[in-house]
Amino acid sequence: MKRIILFGAPGSGKGTQAEKIEREFSFRKISTGDLIRVEVQKKSVIGKKIEEFSSKGLLVPNEIIIEMVNNRVQSSDVKGGYVLDGFPRTLDQVKGLSIVPADEEVAVFLRVDEDTIVKRILSRVSCENCGNVFNTISQLPVRVNICDQCGAALTRRNDDTEEIIKKRIVVYREETLPVINFYRGKGNLHELDASLDINTVWSEIRGLLK
Image (cartoon, rainbow, N blue to C red; front, side):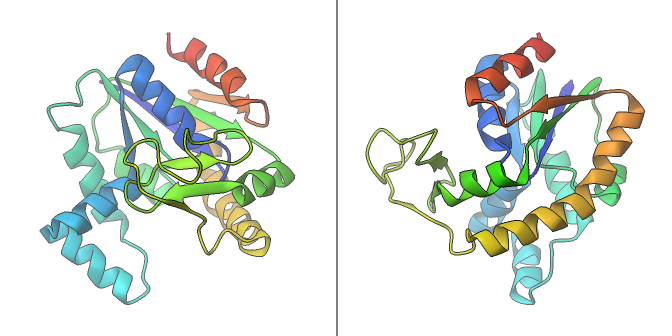
């Protein structure tokens, strides 16, 4: 089974490129945010544990994240491979991911400067129902403020402000750059300029996976 890992700061385009990989190669997109949302909605044992941590303002522990990822990759619809969107974020998560089997692993770092990140995120709108994300500059929905996927209204996140975005970038760099350096040392990291337009970046990713 092939595993593709997409790294990049908030606004680097990880989600968009993961969706393109899923459509082109039939590799299932696995986002830990999506997994958490599903478990909470199902009110599963894991979902109830997640709600306990969230209600106390705590992060979901790595062991729960890894358990969800491991369960997902063993699902019947995940056959030839999968793409991880924004995971692992820390070296502890890298260690946890190492127990999840994969025949081949490709890591892709979507590199983008801070000014571009801020501009992109300030233009972002998302669907509260299904989590689909659009951009008022580069990825408009077919109907204004309506999700193409489920028809629900699109909104801006309350925390998508310039000040908070810059803080998130700092946290990202502190947590995730050691992970990127790990994969760079491992020899399977590909670094791409994600400040280019979506289709150009996609063309480069597509070439890596063929």
